[in-house]
Length: 250
Ligand code: HEM
Image (tube, rainbow, N blue to C red):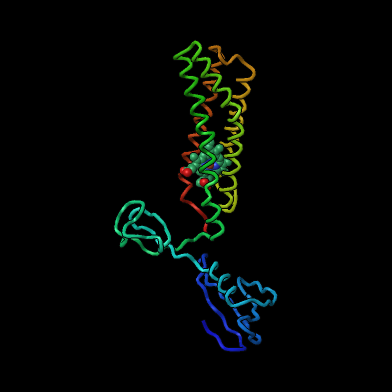
């Protein structure tokens, strides 16, 4: 830090987006531990304000980058200060770690780290599996137990379209944050498949509400469309799993 009384000085911090942030401080007379400061950060000049030196340090600490390290063996990323003797993921000695510089801004990383999409996709995927599985079991067992399985499927069918909408909404949001637009080829395919899954989930619900779902014919139709739904879920998941490590910089 360069400083001199009653003159401009600046402090330079390494920032999370890998750029250096220079905070220019212009002292106009010092009184007590308060100074008048200008912040010139990221090209935006804020109006002059008076603040205490201690507060200034607190503000700047939030700008300072956490030092990240990556395990060269398994790719696990963590904060350097949390690293003990071995990699918590694969167990190799800490000498395998090197400094990691993220190409993604702190704000976008924070959003992606919430894992909205990977969490919400489990609901429609589980429902698709149960719809097919319980329908097959109802054919095998038949009778009262078979009818009970189909009644359970009726409840699941109500939730199917709702969970597909939620998973698709989080997928679109995650995709936009990850790739900054919704037009890359795989995102367009996923949006198409997600829409198809929504239509199929509505058809399954209509079959439950409009046909005798305990009859052989009703169960066969439900099995058919639930299997299409399961296939779409698997396709969405397989594509999504390959996208999880892809992200646009900035
Ligand atoms: C309809 C619009 C959708 C878009 C734009 C979309 C986009 C994405 C993107 C960008 C990823 C990468 C990881 C992430 O950002 O979380 C992903 C992952 C994934 N998506 Fe989607 N998705 C959509 C719908 C769905 C639906 C409806 C399902 C399931 C029924 C699904 C299942 C998955 C799964 C299983 C992953 C991998 C998650 C993981 O491995 O943790 N997606 N999706």
